[in-house]
Image (cartoon, rainbow, N blue to C red; front, side, top):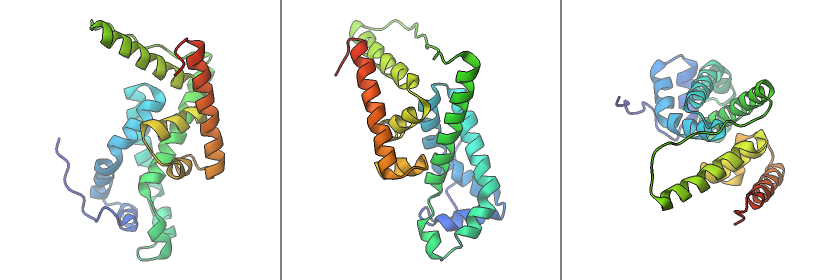
Length: 198
């Protein structure tokens, strides 16, 4: 389904927030068009499940809708605060936290085991090897603790600079870089244990 073009300049975040605060449904559709795919990608890489990812995206966008009056009040159009507003970053932070919460809840319910996905499609040998490596990498990322997983996904899959990834996780840059270092070390050790050290 084609999406109508946004009704406000893409860079004027305070205008978007004001429109959302006024309960403009077109503004919410615009937010979906602007940020929906990136949020889904982030959530899918965190969860490993498309349906869970869709739920997280919807919840993040609903939270933006609910919090829009507060966001707009804190960042009035034309103010210095408005220049710092990044709704995409706000949505990434919310989606990341929602994914972490779901992962923690799921781990408590299932005892912490990560389900494996089965791929029964017949492929050439080289493709099978590549898929096995990719599957192993995905499984190892999914086996990381939630916050380490978020750091890896935001940095390597979403390709966010460390400062933006830290913002998405509501951390200062030094704490984020320390978390990312621990995540990389854990992945390296996990790959080495599998005999596939880089």
